[in-house]
Amino acid sequence: MERRRIRRADLLRLAREGVLTTADVGRILRLPPKNARKAAFDLRKRGLLTRVARGEYAVVPLDVEPSGFRPDPFLAVQKALHGQYAFSHLSALALFGGQDALRRTVHVSAPGARSRRRTLGDLIIHIHRAAPERWSETTSWVRRGRVSLPVRTTEQTLLDLAALPSRRQDYAADLEAFAVLLPRCEPGALRNLVVATPRQGIRVRVGHLLGRCVARDPKHARFRPVLDAIERSVSKPGPSYLGTRPRESGNHLDRRFGIVYPGGV
Image 1 (cartoon, rainbow, N blue to C red):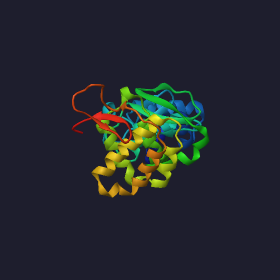
Image 2 (cartoon, rainbow, N blue to C red):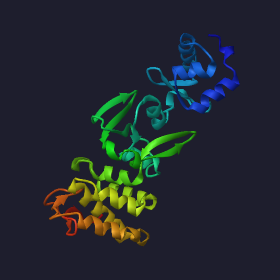
Image 3 (cartoon, rainbow, N blue to C red):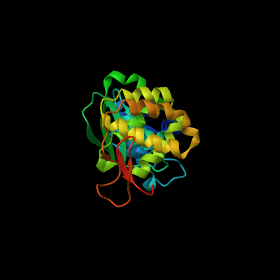
Image 4 (cartoon, one colour):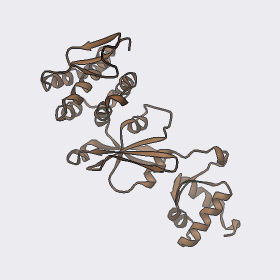
């Protein structure tokens, strides 16, 4: 393919995509599949595209060195996945503004899916199983540039983070996540979601973290009825450990929800 066939208008259309497949290259440049593969190869050689995975590329900004460019992981995963899914856990937190740093691991949930991991270039996609029966009401959308991405709701994200295994819990990070997401939560929706959760361990974790946030910041006082509803849903709680170890010096006990948590946090 001759380089002169790629015009400035073509480059602008490619740039608007951010992340694209070989088929997208063909569609934008109006080329058949065989020529689209050649075009993508040529654009990559010229430093205008960088490879994300087989058949998937990211457009390199003109003012960035191609070797140091890292494509947006959310757009890369969005382009690679098919079927029902939504960004979840730490990835949902990041999309809602809770983190600036981009991680190598991207978390998504899918209704009824088998929990597993898959790779996409140098990215790891952690796929979590979500309950199919509440999928529609616990999924929303966020804008990322020109693209709308499916993401678990803020209320569901709080439950997802609280449901992570103890070995993956970071108590300070959990408190920060709750503080970031609570202003975007609706108390009634959070109450209904938590109380309907069959696992008591998740309910007491949410109750404890929510209680700490309410005690710290008066603007979260509207969640006090949620705390009361969670407490009524709990029978003979704990004790269980959250972000700490048994017999660790400085442990505190939340008697309301039977949670042992680290002191000084």
